[in-house]
Amino acid sequence: MATWRDVRRLALALPGTSESASRDHAAWIVNDKFFVWERPLRKSDLEALGARAPKGPILGVRTSGLEMKEVLLASDPGVYFTTPHFDGYPAVLVRLDKVAVKDLKDVILEAWLARAPKKLVEAFLNKSGRR
Image (cartoon, rainbow, N blue to C red; front, side):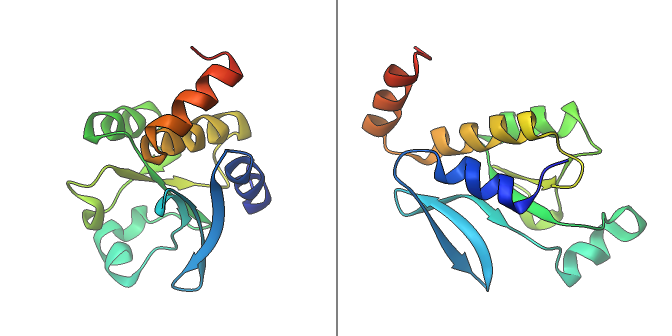
């Protein structure tokens, strides 16, 4: 399925995006805000998830709101999940080795749209013919 190379390629293809690091993990930023980031499970996550804790690479993805978070979580629980750390926060965790690249592209774009400045979003949407 998807890889960190795919995440990097898709995130950096969006206008105004840069790559940074947070806690020694990759993060992609627009408008000085994270929109996707490498998010390995922490001890508290593992304790909360117990036997349900997935193995493999985990991507944090910002959502446009809590409603969109719930939509993603319901759409494919084998790919999208959350932990108590993210309760009340508009973000989901993505099992990178289980998500299709097409779906990854969509969630990265939606995360970027939620965090990018309004003028940059409008210019992108107009140029890409998505309006």
